[in-house]
Amino acid sequence: MKRSLNQQVKAFSILAIAYVALLRPQLIHAGEGWPVYAHDSQHSSLSSVASQKPQFIRWSTPVDLNPQYSGNDLSIHYGSPLITADNTVIVPVKTGATGGFRVEAHRGSDGVLLWSFHTDFSLPPHNGLWTPICGIALTPNDEAVAIPGGGGTVLLRSSPDAATNSQPPTRLAFYGLNNYNQNPAAFRSAIQISTPIASDKDGNLYFGFVSNGQPLPGYPNGIRSGLARVAKDGQGKFTSAIAMSGDRLIQKVAYNCTPALSQDGTTLYVAVNRVAFEIRAFPSAYLCALDSTTLRRKASAPLIDPRSTANNPLAVLAYDSASSTPTVGPDGDIYFGVLEQDFTSNHDRGWLLHFDAQLTVTKLPSAFGWDDTASVVPLTTVPFYLGPSSYLLLTKYNNYVQAGGNGQNYIALVDPNVSMRDPITGVTVMKVVRKILGPTADPELGGVREWCINSAAIDSANHCAVVNSEDGRVYRWRFDNNTLTPGLTLAPPTGEAYTPTVIGPDGAVYAINNAQLFSCGAFGGLALSSEEQ
Image 1: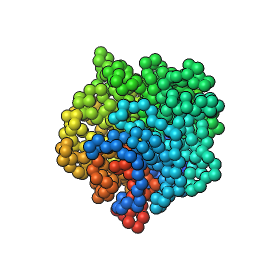
Image 2: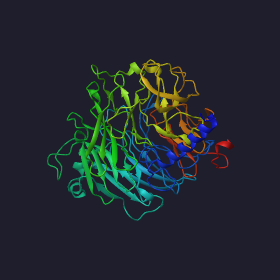
Image 3: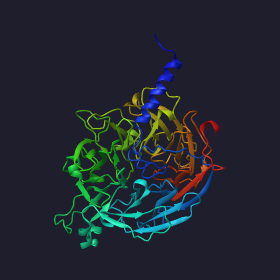
Image 4: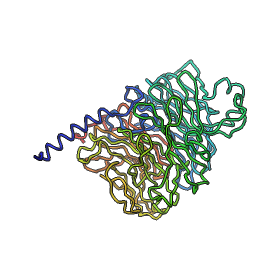
């Protein structure tokens, strides 16, 4: 006998809530801060607290002291702000025109500067069009902030909540600190960190690096570009991009690609690629799965355009001018955004590729992946949805007029296991469950201003996401009634690279716009429940 619809929905909701509770992301510590890029080791972007409605700017601070504009555009990826459980906001700041960085700590309640530290980190070689990220991480229990240093080293600044610290930062080198100390200048010239730093629940640090291969103390044959692991005690390991992929033509970890970890922390996922001018080589990039302790390759999957056939395989780009990183779903599936090699054929939207945990099964892709890290949206956040999946994904869903699109730029919730036919390419892709159009017309290009988020913060309590737009405003997108809160104006409209949104332990909303970090709150400072809004 068939159950009533209400009985089915109730039973399904109970099962879904239990499933999500069992498979919550592996948090780095039990606090309610934002310790790493996209919140946790799986890059879920799922906040542990309710957000405040962005109604006024509490404080702001520059993330770039010398922004380089091209007309009205900013072609730079800024590092994500991080927040301790005690509400200290830590942010990388570019100090010069083409480089130079310091890290600042601000009191979350009012933005008062607590401390500032200049690092000797230098950017990896890049084409000059898009400036890469200087990306930091907090270690478990907010013991220290890990800061990229010169020569591929990491600088640990302990007690990040303390305004003063008598201990100088500790320098760690994945190839051995004794080797670095023999000739620091040689290492600084040869090796640069090229991704944000990732931290696991035990305090191990992971990052990509590039090397010019020159002879170095302890390494007469040089060091190949690849990925490094540094343990809390300073012991390091590293592996080359060739070893990670199993392809001798692969050269390095993709720039800005923050490593992600499986739910149990035993597997690390990251993308590797060739240099940008070899975009038509096949394959040009891989997604790799490594043992997180030994860095031994477990698997590698070539990144392939979903329109490929056996007779016509099409490479895609893990593009160095993007900031896409892998997302690990609650069920262990892996998602990674890539860019098509023929930009106009898919309106420059790229693809969100989808794999099982072993990278052996290619699953349903989504129709947008360019420069985007998918956010995980638990079923408890979308109670209206009655589909079969245990979670949805939030991604940008732009349709770029510059590449033949109509300029109707959306953000969307997609179901990773339900298909639809993409109207632009005809490819079978993830079903769009809900989407919302950018609210501001673009007088220059036509259509609407695009969303400029990468890793949008998800607020389960209020059934919403914090979303940032190139119209200079920050919004909350309510999933249940598909509406945007009135936009809070942060800056004039600016064409810029995609940036993360973040939610602090007090519910404050953080967004980067026009080279400034803004802390935004609700009148009265309350993170209201969805019923109250």
